[in-house]
Length: 349
Image (cartoon, rainbow, N blue to C red; front, side, top):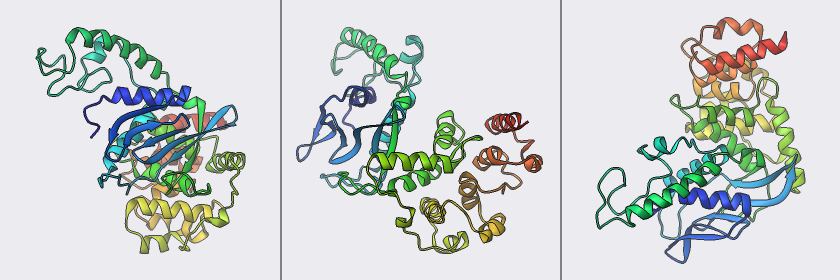
């Protein structure tokens, strides 16, 4: 997929782009298009602008434009880069949050890590050196120490230096900025997760960053986003959001794909000035888990059901629950939900 180059080299390029605005061209593709390249202001993946630095600040952090709608993207080779783009998204998140870089002894013996060198056939530490390696073992030993030093620098993470304004459906970022990317990002935050990894520290951090915490709700997060939009010169109006559905029941009747259910519910919620209707509240317990989970994420009252104590919905319920809701989640084995619940009620005493 990336022609044998290491994940670390791409991480280092993205890191230097974010911190120093460095220019680079990484692995030329057909049609003089590069897999990953930068002019110092834009970071491109093939011929798509993935990230753009704005130079504009919000509360001491630079605002980055982040393109979040690459799912149907096809490059000039006519090849769909769905998997590659998701890997790039994951790598970008790694850099923002920091690599899990441990001791040299631990790192160099992991099967997957930033120190391994991909060669024509083998990895060092797995086989004896042979003539088909890309470099000598002596050269590799010297270079891996330098890589480890850089890995430690990257592992500090960059999340605190940037704010993100999301762009959707614009591969060159030339359309007027609007809320399309933001609404799509909120949908992706939930749709991309499953029961196996929604409760990881990074996922929890992302949830709280965009959906709020026990002390900050999604309305406050939205006002921050509007403030960023104003700084960028966006004419921020929720009236411009397109939504053809009149209720959650209406969305359930006409939309079947999980990602589009999340997307349509998000659009419906923001179109209604970040509120659900009385009919939505009345009927929510009859809806399936997909609808109830995003309803909870967007701040709807408790709608957790028996057997869901370890699911994502329990986490959002714990953040927003009242004292009357306690019996529903008090026995959950989910440590994240417990921690948020305890913190929530300690602060309210």
